[in-house]
Each structure stands twice: as C-alpha cells, then as structure tokens.
Amino acid sequence: MSETLIGQAAEILRKNDLGDYTVPTHGLYPFQWNWDSCLTALGQAHFDEARAWTEIETLFAHQWEDGMVPHIVFHKEDEGYFPGPDVWGTGRPVPTTGITQPPVAGFAVLRLFQRAKDRELAERKARALLPKINAWHEWFYRCRDPQDTGLVAVIHPWETGRDNSIDWDEAFERVPTDGVPPFTRRDTQHANPDHRPTQAQYERYIWLVQKFRSLEWDNTKLHNASPFRIVDPGFNGILQRSCNDLAILAESLGDAAIAAASKKRTARGIAAMEALWDARLGQYKCYDRVADTLIDSPSVAGILASIAPIPIERKAAIAKRIETLTESAPYLVPSHDPTDPRFDGLRYWRGPVWLIVNYMISDGLRLGGQPHIADRIDQSSLELIEKSGFAEYYDPATAEPCGGTTFTWTAAMVIEILAGSDRAAA
Ligand code: GLC
Image (cartoon, rainbow, N blue to C red):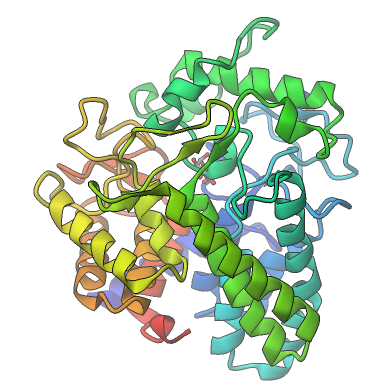
C-alpha cells in the first residue's frame, strides 16, 4: 500500500515540476510559492537530492535586498491567476509579490542537510543558503518586530498561509475597501467558490496590497502603516523552529556568529510566546497588535506552534487539546475548532484539514515526547489520502476533498510520512 501511495505522490511531484521550481498545482496556482517549495523539497529529496536543493535555491534567488523572501515568484506570465504582477507592482526584475510567507526554510534545509546521502553537495548547498536564511530571519525581527518584543507580526492574511482564517475576521473589519477597482477573481474559476474565501475578503486583501504598493513596498514603513498587524503563534512557532534549526546548521558548518544570533532569537521568541498561551483551551492564541488584544478564536495556529521548541508541558497540553478535538473531528487536525459556531468544514482555512499543518504539528509533538498523538495525526493524514486522493485540503468530518487536486505539498507530505521515518531524529 505504502509503495503505491509513494509512487502516486512522486508522480504528482513530477507532473508539477517545471524544471527548477514546482507549482502547487497547475491552473489554480501557476507560480512558485514560498512555503510550498520548502516543504515540497522534503518530498523531492527522497528521489533526487540535487533537485530538492534546487527548489529552495530558486526561491532564494529572488530574495529581496532587505532580506525578505517573497510569498510568490511570478517566473512566467499566466493569465489564470489573480492578483498577478501588475497588481503587486513591486518592480522586481523577475516579478514577485511584496509580502512573505511562513519561514519554513530553516527547518527544511536542516532536515535536507542532516539526511543527505550526497554530503559534498549538501555541505555546498547549505553553506550558500545559510547566510540567506539568516538574513531573512534578521529581516523579520527588524521589520516586523520594531518594538523588539521577540514576536513578529504579519501585515496581510496571505502571509500566514492561512488566508481566510476566522482569526482575522474582527481585525479585517478595520481594513477598508474604498478605492479597490472591480476585478475578476480566477480562483473561483478553478475551484468550487463555496470552498474559497468570500468576495468581501478578497476586496480587503486587494486594499492592503494597494496600500503597501502606495508606500513603494518600503519595509521600514509597512508594519506601522498596516491596519492589520497580527501576531500569529503558528507563524512565530515556525520562525522559532527555523531559528533553532539554523543554529544547529550554523554550528555544523562552523559559523559561530549565525549560531549565536539564531539561538538568541529562538530563546527570546519562546519566552515571549507565553503571553499568547490560553490555559483554559490548552493552546496559544493570536494577538491583535493594533487593538492590543488576544483574539478569541480557537484555530489551528495555536496548535501549530508545537513545531517550535516550546516547553514540554505546553506540548503535553496541546496533545490533550488535540485529543479533545477528536470528539468533534473524525479526521485530524481541523484548521478551526468544529464546536465553534463560525467553523466551516469546507471553506479553506475555516475548518478543513491541511496535510502540511498535520506534518508540522506531528513533528513537533513527536520531538516533545508525544508520539502517541503524533502517530494519530499521521494516521489521519494517510486515511484522508486513501479515501480522497491528493487534494489541497479536506473536510474533517467527512474527508471530502476540497480546493485544488493533485496537490504538490500534499504529495510531498505523504512521502515524508511514509518514507521519512528518520524525521523526528533532527
Ligand atoms: C493558498 C494557501 C497558501 C499556499 C498557497 C499555494 O493561498 O492558503 O498557504 O501557500 O495556496 O498552495
């Protein structure tokens, strides 16, 4: 069974491979996405290590001078996606968007490096990527934590990778829509509109893009100028894990300065996360930096934070929290608590299960001494695939496949779950 699934997953990776980068799926997402690529490389490495390194190298070839790594690289024109390069207007030689995405690169690169069979290649590639990933981390703390709190904010929901989460609903009310010209969405032509964000949300997404564009994408200004500034525990947890892993990588490669700076960032971030902990729920919550308040929304962000080296008692509480979720979600881990009336099992990040999120939670909990729940999450991931194929996301109640099909990072995660048995050793 697992051989067949690995074969099917490998076939999807091949079909979506455009040479030196991989599209998330043809049609719906025809370019290179940041965190998709880094997680995809983990799957590719099982068949072709050189190709896996290239995936991440291509992304970093488009890093901005200030250190930011953009959320999409528009390698070639494609009319099938909105908003395309003309809307972003970032003026890059190869167009990119002007916002970023969850920084999984540090985590993925350490894993590729530690597992590599071709040691010479791995050392060369990792050595070249090390300062670039470090510059991205530095950028985060400089531009997205100007008050030096230890936690970074996102300024657009697309940065979190959880585009239409219930977490943003209230803060999004502050984002106006005036001055947004009429536009034609393309996503709803490729996927069921009931599974996608609403029109009202899209208008606000575009308003923010226009606002940042009017400031010429100057990252010294964007944070304070955005009416949407959220501290997301999942996003910060990923950053802390990547800083932690970059420190390990830097030590292996003999770069004491990057190792020390990365360790410091991790420790500060983890200490600051305590302010986001909700003891009643047993998970972290998002914080609205503009309204200065915790956001009352039990989403997967506060569970995904378990990817970070947070204290083991926090991981144990999160494991319990997931146990509770099994009572309302036959398939783990829902992107929002099904007992919340705002939950929607089919609509993108308002309820469905995403395999990449499952993978990262499972990894963090396994490392935190919770193998039992980690195994259950992996098992759910595989059940979803067997029942419903390699979809973009799934209804946690029925396993109904939603969004795009033949999805790259879903396939990569299946390979990781089935073939990457060493993954918790990192
Ligand atoms: C959607 C997801 C985002 C992902 C992108 C490409 O926008 O919300 O997380 O990176 O699709 O798969």
